[in-house]
Amino acid sequence: MSSSSFHSFETQAVHAGMDYIQGSVCLPIFQSSIYKLKGDEDSSEIQYIRSNNTPTQLSVSRKIAALERGEVALVTSSGMAAISNALLTFLCNGSHLLAQSNLYVGTQNLIIKKFPELGIESDSIVLDSPEDWHQKIRKETKVIYVETVTNPTLEIGDLKSVVSFAKEHNLISIIDNTFATPINFNPLSLGFDLVIHSASKYLNGHLDLVAGCVVGTQKMIGPILERLNYTGSCLDPHACFLLSRGMETLALRVHQQNQNAMRVATFLEAHAQVERVIYPGLISHPQHSRAKALFRGYGGILCLELAGDIQQTKRFLDSLQIPLMAPSLGGVRTLITQPAATSHSKTISSKRKELGISDKLIRISIGIESPEDLITDLSESLDKLSGK
Ligand code: PLP
Image (cartoon, rainbow, N blue to C red; front, side, top):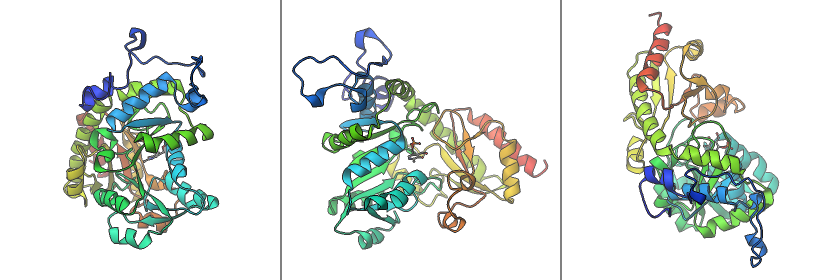
């Protein structure tokens, strides 16, 4: 089915990209690494798994492109493979990058620790402050790189201004849309050049694979595909099958996660044992009106801080029954972490403070369980703290 036949996310999540080859209603895993030549192709048309052009890879790529409202998509062996290959396609020795100050730690370390070894310089920018970007841009600046929603503090930058700034200065604008998912937000429709996902998270949704993707126009994706062929960052056909199957329920899952997270956030915000809740759907969120204007849903991630000390936080985490303590997100099951002890454990504490990550901060990635059960579990664990 062509991705233009139906426009709703629910239908596209199921049907887009599928060829129903030989009548197969599920995506076949074409495990063949190489394909028979027809005799008239040039070398660029040879089908090989590393070239990311075999039927299972192409099918899942078409599904992602349809959902992200892009011309084409490319699947990669991880989210970091998507990020590093995309950035290194447009940056080289001597070029400069503007990158949001509080990016996912892996991306941040790549840019700050590894890019200087290649002669690529960067400046971190505050996403709410266009004056800051104007001060930091140089004639060598080629790319501006941001995330839709930051991790773990869930800030939402001035994304419209990022797009117009990029266009004004001829920069390539790249956005990591992992947290929002294409169900809640399509950055290409706002004018971004490239969208990236860690497909290990919401797109797959079952916490059983690592994958990534980049979406954009044929013109932008072509050179990334060429680089991917050299770096060998392709996605295995079996992982493509799992990703495609996971994506069939993406819309259902994300709708449920949006609703669950809103209910849980509202419950927590009203609880006496809770000092602070961060969730873009709450009016108390500093960029709530921006989130409302940009997104179709507020997502499945929320953060909280309890009123008590760090020991209370630990007791709370230990007594929860449903959320599993694990440092990932976007899956069907609720996961909970303390970023200061996991993703940001290697960040020095003054920097953590600057980023708004206190030792007590808890991040919850809400799953698709019943919101009543989640709230009961949270409520019972909070009650235990006050000796109820
Ligand atoms: N982008 C974001 C926002 C992430 O949270 C992560 C991983 O947690 C990545 C990218 C990297 O993705 P992967 O683990 O699939 O390489």
